[in-house]
Length: 176
Image 1 (cartoon, rainbow, N blue to C red):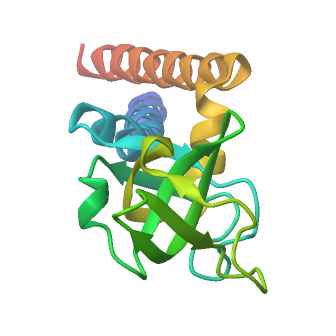
Image 2 (cartoon, rainbow, N blue to C red):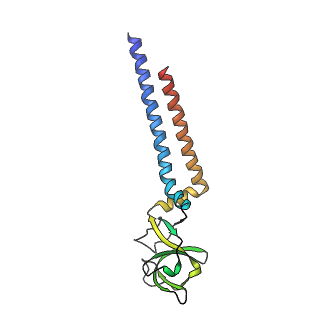
Image 3 (cartoon, one colour):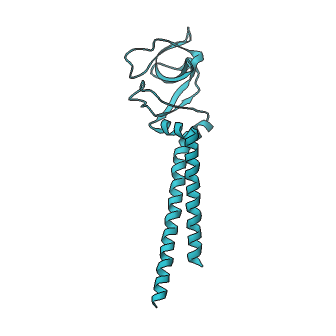
């Protein structure tokens, strides 16, 4: 009688561990997907994605935000629109103060800056209009697109797979 109770306790503890390992595996996979989807899907839908690295648009768009930029007809942009544009090989995100369609030039300003940008932005420099922004996702996205970030994501997925395999094997042992 005592042996049977001990065997049932071992079986039920293996079963609990199996469930915990498989749940943990699922949580890790969902966590990785939750981070990767907002970074990957917009690109598939035609948006450019950029990481905000300066505070010139704070508090509206804080440092570390992910911005989604959609191509827009530059002549249709208006005062108050936030755009992304190239300046000296760097992507800048600022608000339009004025759109001079005749000269095809934009006057821009970062929200946190006291005055308008010294250089105007030509239509040819414009990437597009900022459609959405997500705080913190830019920094996470930048890390995950780096070599060490990709390796970390792969390691997390491998860990999740390993936990799932162990959990499944434990479940199979308790059922036989």
